[in-house]
Image (cartoon, rainbow, N blue to C red; front, top):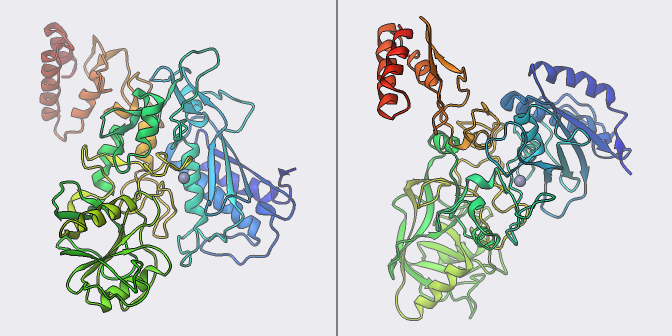
Length: 544
Ligand SMILES: [Zn+2]
């Protein structure tokens, strides 16, 4: 049985007062649940760390949550209070935390897409009311199995998880950075009384670039197949698309097949040790490593890998041992072939300052394909960084990738960005140590994605993932400085009203240029059939 922490109530009241000043409207309100002496009520004394003034472990944890709530509140500016329940408990190995909505809603006031599920917090915001006043909007759990860093300055020790970044991540899920899909079956929820299931707002912009279909347009079987279409599922919402060049860097590691030739490069997980791969990279023939009759490279390598790229199987010993053995035998590079299906291939961990050749991990299917090719002839590859592509985008539509994982990982698949993104993103499946406390450009794409979902909605009827003019001027008629033109202020399919174009012209420094701009805009709108010639004249008169 858990109850709301009593011991820390005084601290809560004080810090909530600070958070309330950050927003004139709603805010994220966290209720802390803890069994006596544990989690948020952990009385273990703690020295203030990294700007966190708490003096017990429990207080410091609470302070981190309030900081995360303040950061998100400041950015999303919720119209309604968002109620979140948080607790520490034992979670499965490797899981730092989890969060989600208690309720999902569709066809509520202000929804810009029909029959489309939204998480509770986002639905309340768009509807401007609490659609499920009974209950929490977000329920989040954090693991007791980790010693988190509790400072607010991203100064965690190597191997330590940053709680502030972790909480920002989980709150992101609670704000609808997740779909309502069972990725194993592709099933989506059917509302009570309906015969067909509804799509969800996240799936509206999740696109399989092999088929070109978005997830809401797919059958359950198609979604299940797409969920494992690794590095070929990406986000086609407008605001992520507009922000990607501000956030992502060029350069994706990969293996180009020269002999036998192939146009699609192999995915490569980067090594944490040795020299980083370059655009020029290393090119060589691939030789299967032979160490005393094994292919794991854990002892001296006897096959002739000198001047070549050694292919070594994962397993038995550390990656650094394998790569060092290949280096000692004269190899110029190493491909570690995975021994289990895990796509995209994870990086290679380890530390060894004496390693001077590049290495990386390829997936089990690619390793098997190379071995098959080797049986019938030479295999020549180039390990390099492809600087023609933004890291973390697909190669078909160049959209920002979401995490299609094979095998499927329910709760992780699709509802994250792909691990290929550089710099690392807060909403990747794992919390990386180089993350900073930002959820918006130029560091991060999380807020642009939430913008596509509707957090900046202007309720103009155009879904925000397609809306070029968020914050549209929605007066019934086009009004100028001189008069009301009485021309209906039509909203286009791009989400821009006629008044939005006029207001954009006001950004020009000179009044005369702004007037010319407005006349040109009106002429274009007439050319598109949005307004008549008579209405053009009326608008032009009022803009003088
Ligand atoms: Zn997550």
